[in-house]
Length: 65
Image 1 (cartoon, helix red, strand yellow):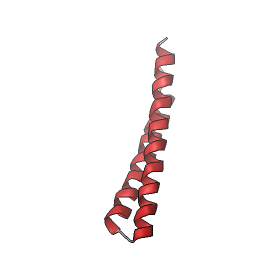
Image 2: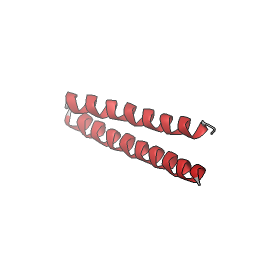
Image 3: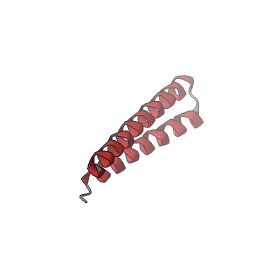
């Protein structure tokens, strides 16, 4: 039961990180289109953050109880 909950949590974190990364890419792309520096920076940091969330989720899945 606990393994199933942890597996579900890991999947939720990875999917959330992927959505965060994708939204950051959209924000960065819109910033590039409009030549808006703050939006580009914000979008790129959001992409980095989404990648870190995905990595944390994958690392969480590798932890054995």
